Amino acid sequence: MIKHSWIAMVLLCLLLFFFLMHEVQSENTLTFDTYITELISVSENSFWFTFFKWITYLGKSMSIGFGSLLCVLYLWIIKKDYWTMAVFSIGIAGGDVLNGWIKNHIQRVRPENHLMETAGFSFPSGHAMVGLLFFSMVAYLIIKQVKGDSLKWAAGIGFGCLVLLIGVSRIAMKVHFPTDILAGFALGAAYSLTLFNLYKFLGRRVL
Image (cartoon, rainbow, N blue to C red):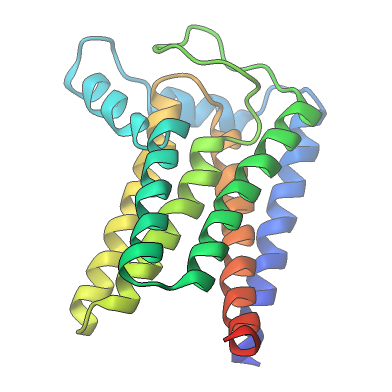
């Protein structure tokens, strides 16, 4: 039962995502969005504005793309782990394509009064979804390599906090609604869990 509990987690994440998508498509003003946006509001030229502006760059397509390239080169040249390299590449590219397809389908307009330049539609957040996917995969690779439970926990918690901060930064910069971030996390988690378990399942048959 516990062995396949990831399936239940994937279903719960997908349920949350489709619930949020339904609420967004209703085009009503969501109380959750209003409350969280006001809670995380920052002023320009403040410390928190500068902090979140730097954090949000870590989830940009350019940063994720460059980081993915480094990981692929590491797996290819140093580790010679071609199976993991293929799954990593296909996983990141597939997640990005899926996110773009859903955005173009939902076509939710971004919040007004952005604090930084942005383009495209809003739901679900690519920073939240693809960022969670990328950093969870990097954390997975690190956890596989390091010895000692304390280091494994430190890597997992550290990357988890970074992903959360990236999500918060998008709300603080007023380029996403909180429901965009939550939906991105939900879909990213479902995608990541499915990818990791397919990686393990198929790996035993490919290798």
